[in-house]
Amino acid sequence: MQPPSGKPDSRDHPLTAPPWAALAMEIVIVAAAPALLQLARYFSWGAGAYRLCTLLGVFAIVALFNGRQPRLSSVFTHGWARGVLIASASLLVALQARVFVTDISAGQACITDMGRPTICAGEWLLRGMNPWAECLVKHPRALAPAKKVAKRPPRAKPAHAAAKPAHAATKPAHAATKPAHAAAKPATAWGWCAANVSCIDRKAGHAYANWAHHGGGYDFMDGYKYGPLMALLYMPATHIWIERGIYVTNALLWLAVLVLLARLAALAYPALPCAPWRALLLFSLPATVPFWWKLPRMQFVLAGTRYPSSSATPGSFLRELTLTCSNDVVPVTLLLVAVLLAARRRSLLSGVFCGLSLATKQLPAPLIAVLLVGLEGVSWRRFLLGTVCTAGALYLPILLWSPREALANLVLFGALRPTNNSSIRAYLPGSYEPLVSLLQLAVIAGLVWMWLRAPRRDLAALLRTAALVVIVFVALNKVVHANYILWIQPLVALSIAGWPFAPTALRTRESTVAPASCPDV
Picture 1 (cartoon, rainbow, N blue to C red):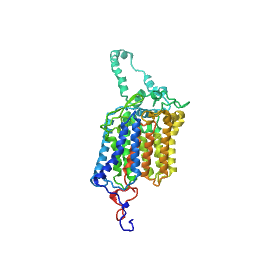
Picture 2 (cartoon, rainbow, N blue to C red; picture 1 turned 45 degrees about the vertical axis):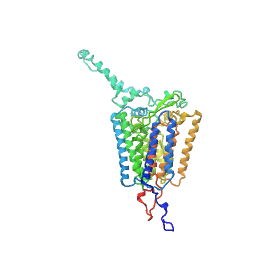
Picture 3 (cartoon, rainbow, N blue to C red; picture 1 turned 120 degrees about the vertical axis):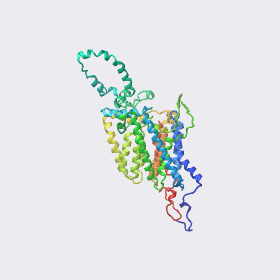
Picture 4 (cartoon, rainbow, N blue to C red; picture 1 turned 30 degrees about the horizontal axis):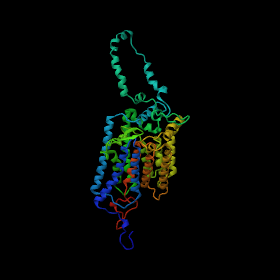
């Protein structure tokens, strides 16, 4: 609409800037958050204060980039710049695939204790054993295969048996090599678990030796710490390839995340054709480009113990899903599907996938679910029905099977576990920890309240608020492990992918939408 004077209103047009300034701003927008995420990965054990600062920096970028709505045009909208954007995003995706192929081919063992419990929980469930409540050495089925083999008597005639000693004498040398080979590389996943696991996820010693546990009747904390769907999703691949099966499953889920990012960015910013490619670029940069490759391997000292920084090499994020055997990509993938379905106003089905995410890992699904109930076009009743029924149907058999042990491992362990030195809480007196928890809950509650009362509750606004909520939860948590940054990474990419474009349609002098401005409608 033009003013009475007949002159076009400057507010109806995107601001223009010199090409070099516009390109510099785009680079800052695309690179700032990924650089800080990789720096957070660099600050590892013993560097909780530094990791907090980097995560708060990411929080500030998301809040700043989305808090203001300047009317600007993207240099990646058309022409050679758009081609550069698409080529860059495609190259980074190819580099990610290369990391997965390399690690799957190598098939190295998991370097943390996150992969082994998931592998063996699936094997135990196949045999009717309870991975939340039973130890292998106490279960009669654990010895069943050995007993069955031992009961088979050798069929041999006396005359033939007498001729065997000379030949049999050569067997012990060959037979002696078998146990060592079998222990190094068992033929089956069950054999691997039987050789390496007594309890699914043993927490009764080491850092937990002086812990008061869960109280009377809830003292078993050596069981599986994840939901039943986690083990079932990994089981088809891990049953065949053991640890390498985790690599394969995570690679497929990572590919699904890339597709979901492109679809969500296209829905959130429909008038910005470059948004999907920007989302892929933002998501892929910390996983493939070592922003901090010149930083030295520093030593962080806490309570007299030295902790080295993580290696600032390409693929450090991806190796959370291979060498580290992290399973956080599972709940994140299911949660992104739930967000996509909610954006398409499929409330019940969105709730189903949110419940599936909750049935793999207790977080981060609840953090996003409280936001999805307020998304425009979502029926909160149908969404909650799908979430509660799906999660309940998967958790109820476990709770009926072993209620105390399931509650201890699935709820109380996470709520009462000790703080470690990946968190800022380790640097504070113990009496301050409840205050940090209150601050964490207060900030999250404030963000949710602002979201529910906001005039705009569309997908773009949801992604921004979701990123802020998850960052606050992880940054102030009692443990801030590197695999939790995988929760933040896709939400940050999506929230920044459409910035800095106005939420209302921009008009040209003829009061028509200007395609080159890529507005966010």
